[in-house]
Image (cartoon, rainbow, N blue to C red; front, top):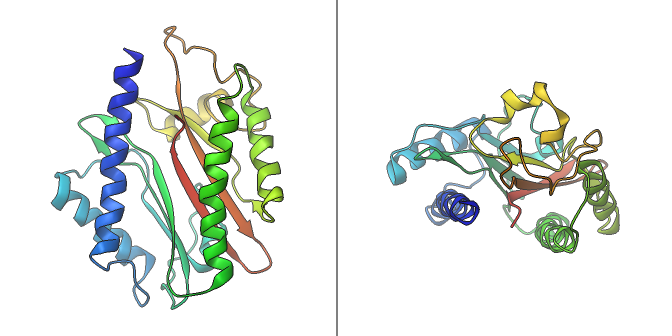
Length: 225
């Protein structure tokens, strides 16, 4: 059952990333439109490609200084500027399997923004590889590892969490129940421990690095496998 679940989650994730790739190929990610406009275009594209209208959490497009804001905040709608940095955070549901994916994009040639995007992708892989050298680690310990990783790359960690469980429930619902479902400073449970039904749990890893002085941030998330 475990391998089947992972395979289904990976197939779902691949579709979500394909949605982003098609958006890029079609030239949707450009300056001059608002975050909200781009968000609505991605929503329409998801319906066109896959016939889906179902998302398990709010769809996020953040640009410019809004890239400093973590998931739970709702900053005012910005217009995407030339030489901007932006990220997507989407949670589409395909045939009742969830994806939760995030990617960063840079419009133009700003070297610092391109470095941030590249660093996030490298750090995500470094964090993933390090995690799987462990057989036991608490959510709090793994959160701190990712905070330290941001410092190592010369950035600040921007998220109040570094990920969460993925399954058949939205994180809005599990949020109030327990920090144990999050890679969070207050989660002192082993991430490798089985769930309530005795089955292996699957996690999403989120990397959110920011530069508070330059007011830019970047974000990447996907299944921790």
